[in-house]
Amino acid sequence: MSDSKKQMKFSVISGLFWKFAERMSSQLVSVIVTIILARLLMPSDYGTVTLVTIFITIANVFVNDGFGVALIQKKDADDLDFSSVFYFGIAFSIFLYLIIFFGVAPIVADFYNMPILVPVLRVLALQLPIASINSVQQAYVSRKMIFKKFFYATISGTLISAIVGITMAYFGMGVWALVAQYLTNTVINTFTLRTIIGWRPSLQFSLERLKGLFRYGWKLLI
Image 1 (cartoon, rainbow, N blue to C red):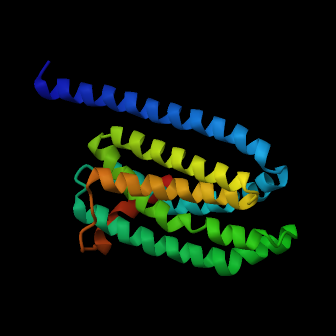
Image 2 (cartoon, rainbow, N blue to C red):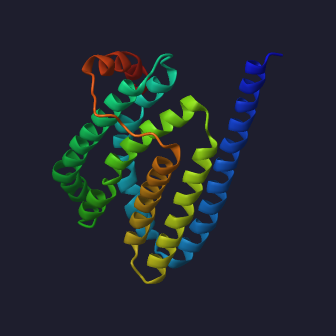
């Protein structure tokens, strides 16, 4: 077996190990945190956040899916491709956030007759621009097969957000404890990954590259 094949085999095995470790550790912490929060919060707090996360999840599909996978699959993806998707993702996620802020949030709150949904949805939707940044970073990590970085970012976000959520719930902040937990997880995960991978977008943008990626990514988006 050649050295290149040995190196590839090692990278695949190492990647699988760290991906498994990331999933297991985050799920374990999440289960423990959920058990603790269930003793501190009311069922209505979980119901409120669950209603909101439905709309955030749908919005995240448009922000994260498609372009990220296209970056991973494109054989000759370079810094111009990553930077173009990075800037477009931020602009598009801000556009979606404004739609949620001014349009979706009031409509959803009126439909369910729950005024609290307006501020909760508006605040929780702040994760959209952050998630768009992280999707490009995750694509970079996947292409480089440096899944160990995922482990550090995920476990950092999970642990710190758990502390924030439990602390706020203990002091009786109700639904906002869950909102803060979700937002903190996204922020810490993104910031940690940004710090340890070393990739930064360059000051360049190509609409043609974006169109090429979209021709592949829209199928995944659908």
